[in-house]
Amino acid sequence: MLRDDINNAVKEAMKAKEERKLSTLRMVNSAIKNADIDARGQGKPPLSDADLLGLLQKMIKQRQESVELYDKGGRAELAAQEREEIAVISAYLPKQMSDDEVKAAISAAIAETGAAGMKDMGKVIGVLRAKFAGQMDFGKASGMVKAALAG
Image 1 (cartoon, rainbow, N blue to C red):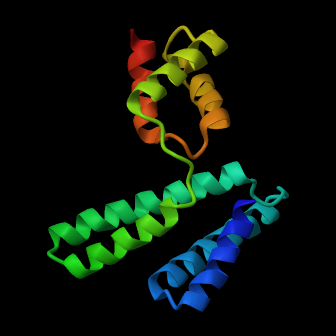
Image 2 (cartoon, rainbow, N blue to C red):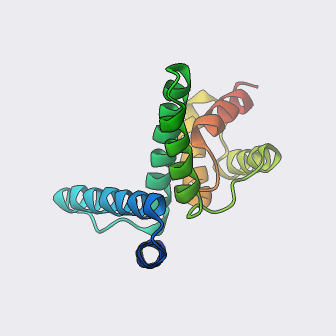
């Protein structure tokens, strides 16, 4: 399980005295625990690996936005720190799909759902999320789905 991998990596980072990796992994663990607490409050089970992948992607996206802001603000040292965190978190995501693979997956999902127009976009995205969690950027994919359904 992904949780076990992260916890083992925390222990290894402690032993190796890798401060950046350790602090990043502790932050990831904290985010996972908070999400579990939220889920428990809503009567849901703890997060599955697919949900955890979505959480990790969200964390990476937040850091990418921070990098842009730090670069614009001339804060190179903070931007570098965020990039290091992105690298640590990315290690726990599966290989990202190429644009061609995403297009093929979208075509298959449209065929599977029988989507005919924009009103079916939610069905298509739902199928993609179920099959490819953590492997594709759904922000980019939704634009591609929109384009495919628009004709």
